[in-house]
Image (cartoon, rainbow, N blue to C red; front, top):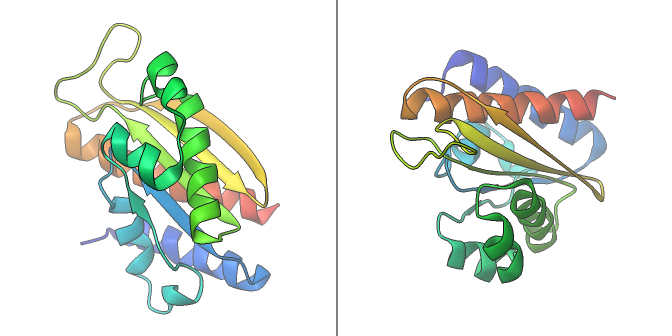
Length: 162
């Protein structure tokens, strides 16, 4: 079930996309399809969302999104370099104007000193431009995943309001 606030963000995203006649997609690792689920909770989302990608393994990132193996080896799956390639690869594969990609460490294990639990890298593709950033969320696995979904939708809404 999607919270009211996340549903409102997904609905708002759909309105922005419909105004532009644009399509969106998502490429997800740590959220396991949560962003796509939130988006498709909105009635009529098939007008602006055709497909998403759950690429949990490195192999899936390479096969489905054309992420470069060298980038994965050099930076690791949880990196801005990888999510930038994920976002662009998803946008190309889905023929979308907008894409969000996420890869992170939701915990409870897997964190390191340089990439602690809660580290999430975001890649955003908006009309040909790719941007990336990293956020660190706190809490348990579910709250980190929920914060990631919320942040992704908030970011996209802000970008499309400009």
